[in-house]
Amino acid sequence: MPSYTAPNKDVQYVLHDVLQISEATTPGYSDLDVEFTDAILEAAGALASDVLAPLNAVGDKEGCTLENGIITTPTGFKAAFEQVKEGAWPGLDMPEEFGGQGLPYVIGTAVGELFSGANQAFTMYQGLTHGAASAILVHGTDDQKATYLPNMVSCEWTGTMNLTEPHCGTDLGLMRTKAEPQDDGSYKLSGQKIFISAGDHDMSSNVIHLVLAKVPGGPDGIKGVSLFIVPKFNVNDDGSLGTSNGVSVGSIEEKMGIHGNSTCVMNYDDATGYLLGDLNKGMRAMFTMMNEARIGVAMQGLAQAEAAYQNAVIYAKDRLQGRAVTGAENPNGPADPLIVHPDIRRNLMDQKSFIEGARAFMLWGASLIDAGHRGGDKDAEGLISLMTPVLKGFLTDKGYEATVNAQQVYGGHGYIEEWGMSQFTRDARIAMIYEGANGVQALDLVGRKLAQDGGKHVMAYFDMVKTFCKTSDAPEMEEFTTPLKAASKDLQAAGMYFMQNGMKNPNAALSGSYDFMHLFGYVSLGLMWGRMADVSLKALANGTDDPEFHKNKLITARYYMARQLPMTGALLKRIESGADPVMALSAEAF
Image (cartoon, rainbow, N blue to C red; front, side, top):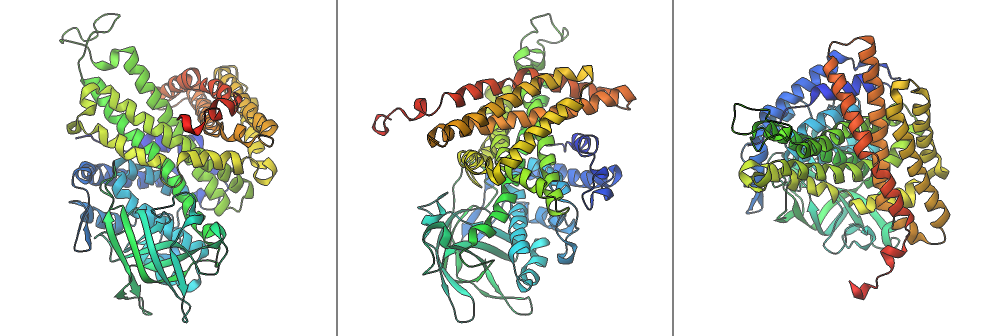
């Protein structure tokens, strides 16, 4: 069975050495000193490694069962969920007035990686609840907040988001679920939703569904969509649970992975619902939840890559196979360990350089959310809006690729379920699809985010890279800043190509959007590795208690700059080839 160890040392390095969070001006960050965050991460890591990780394979094998309308989660899930609730982990970064601990989002993100790396399917139950609670927090009335948030923050009640229907996925304007207004101000919802993660289960006393639906007589398409709070059990005026609502589970979806999560077909039959936010403005309210969810899904890509990588390293060091081409390195044994072979090293270095760069990218993104929400920094809000599709798309694509590479280290054993490596690959695969498939993320990036606020935020990003390269002018930094400058120029050239060709031929931009998202991701990880190299060079120059850690950071940074960042040149060439190679073949010829 695979194991999992929380990568707390690296998380602390990013938080304190790279981001220097305790010195930031964002409200609440001054409390986040090394000792405080270490205590949180140590407790979260112990829960992740000792409780959640052993249940990962259990959830994969058993899945969830539906019998007589009741869903049962895998063995051990319910007891583990009680431990998570007792530790107040679901409300780590939620407001204290509703029972949360009020810590910054960056800490919730760091802890979320540990829990998701240990058991993604399990962690989704509280993750979806957090997103639903956030939507109510932003868009709900005072009465709605008082009614739902205390129990959702504690996960006594869990939450979901209901968007997709059998006939429509991304094109939500086609939805058929109806919400009929009632005399008392409530609505009666009827329709069917599919792919509803954590749709129902036995670990909470109520499930609060946020459901997109159309009110008759509203505008056509997406402009006529509203968002509703629909509880599984109606809530009485005194806060107690009342009658069962018109909500039922049609079936549990049979999926490739995340078997431990109850992904449901949900049926709404005159279910009582309450408008959340403004009428016909449902997408505005839902995007509060979806944008948070997309950051969380980006984190899942990183988390699964980390878990798979850890086990691949253990296997590569233990498995004896062949001899090093330069001479036996294990002369007293029948063969050398796999890790002596250059191609295994290449594979593991691809994973390592991605994971550590992605972690810095992820936590930097979370710090931007805090700067925007807690500090009122509009520039930070604009920048994270730009970066969200890059985080979601690039980290899940490359995270999945990393799990495949980890599986490859095992050779034939990686394909055998007994070794558990296929679960990381199967679980990681969904992250590329849900909360907006990655092709949609790329379209959002190129079609909307680049031009947002007159292109202000992408220009700020280019200036940030330029400023970093200019201020990091020590001679020993040139090996990191020179390739970063070249990659940034590739990104700017791609953006210029879209500006020059996109208006007259939109397909020219959209055909290159996926490559552009990846190009942006490579540059962003290059920026993170540049920052880490700068920090570790200074640590070694000034004296450090752990020189090997910083030397290894520099080795990994050099690998990324030499072996990964040059991908931007190839991606630019693909983008500049335009729409013709993509669109030339007739539909009938496929």
